[in-house]
Length: 202
Ligand code: FE2
Image (tube, rainbow, N blue to C red; front, side, top):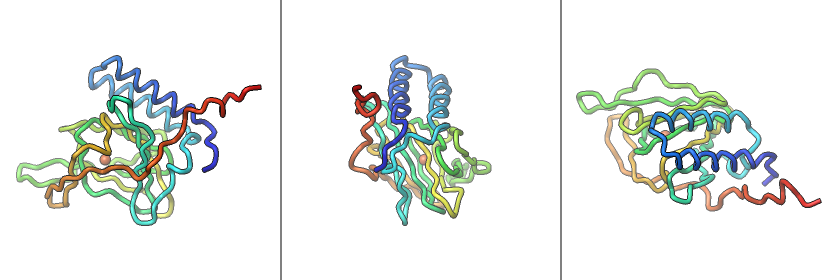
């Protein structure tokens, strides 16, 4: 893995996000302030270690970058190979999605009165520096895909739980629900805590 020029950006985000939750903000305030903070993080593409930016040839990758010590939030890099997409799925906790590299489409779905899933308006295109917010029972069901057929895209997600351990659901286009727990693609986490690398002794 090559050296990451600015690991302090990720470290600062994690600390600031924990402080935000310590302040017990109301949902709207957390979403607003959290979106601003994530937007700042993804407006610089110089901090994600290469090991957590690697696509898989067959399916998207979800690399855990950090879980809060009380599992109040988790941070994940989603890496989309060319043309890759998720199934239609939900989250069941709040979420923030910030675009770091490339771009992606998020297509929302809502239940109609016949119990069918229907597309909820046009897909949202996220570009680097932009953030989408997800709220349970509001806009919690969507499908995400790489907007590019010829390049990798990467988005950084924050969720209100250890998302890889949350039992949630994927849906067929007809709306048939199937329970799943996503887990993560990686076994080790980025080491952003070795300050001697950033401030070596003279
Ligand atoms: Fe999602």
